[in-house]
Length: 183
Image 1 (cartoon, rainbow, N blue to C red):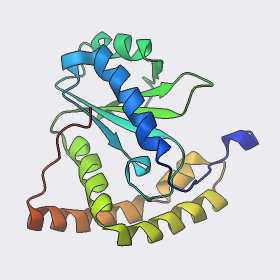
Image 2: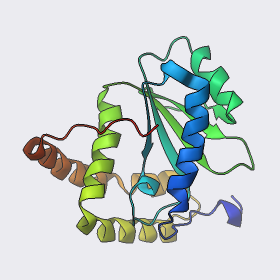
Image 3: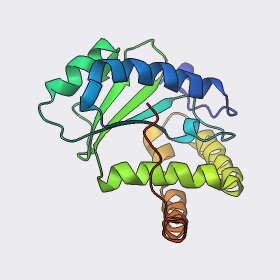
């Protein structure tokens, strides 16, 4: 890995929401009704939260098949399917080399993994007191594992599971449901 590949945690930027809107509009135009939802997820979707400057977009679909219904439109938007992604609950796309970092997570509508991403996002949006510990963890992991994305990601697991337990209780007491699709 080069120095430019180093994991970098940046202060929150309003430009992330603007970048998502631009990208989501293009994805919606290409995918049409195939995309049941298009949502801004991950840390860049949480106002005030420091993050890697990578826009995470979740596209919810009824089915992964036929795969061409996903790959062809998303390739028109500049995203490349990563069929070697080991997570079988999603289909994963990335930006073309040199383009703005973007991760497209295509998941089945209503699936546990789709709902998990939305619940985590909405809980964190509503609990700013959770931000500082998460940012401290991310900065610490980036310092220790700046060139090892797998170790950086694995280092957040315990935090994610502790938050999702609190988020689950919050969802039960508030009657949480995902808001309408972002795009």
